[in-house]
Length: 75
Image 1 (cartoon, rainbow, N blue to C red):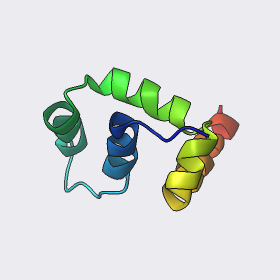
Image 2 (cartoon, rainbow, N blue to C red; image 1 turned 135 degrees about the vertical axis):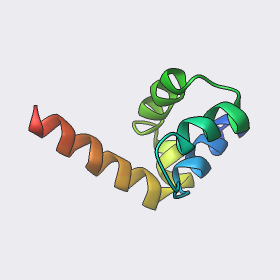
Image 3 (cartoon, rainbow, N blue to C red; image 1 turned 45 degrees about the horizontal axis):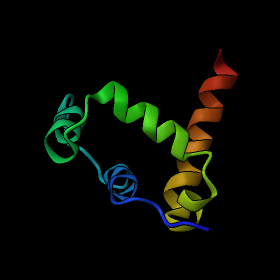
Image 4 (cartoon, helix red, strand yellow; image 1 turned 30 degrees about the vertical axis):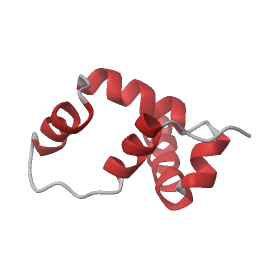
């Protein structure tokens, strides 16, 4: 199994951080990763289905999967 890229690892690492207020996360996405927030969330969503991401950061991936499923159930 291939390893995650450094960008993929950085995305998962960013998700492990707390952010103090509105806009702080989006600002961090732009500054640290050089991505537009929309693209970041597209990549993150794809990572949640990647077994390599689960192996790399199981707590983060499982938490985000639960959030995603609860949001889907609300629809």
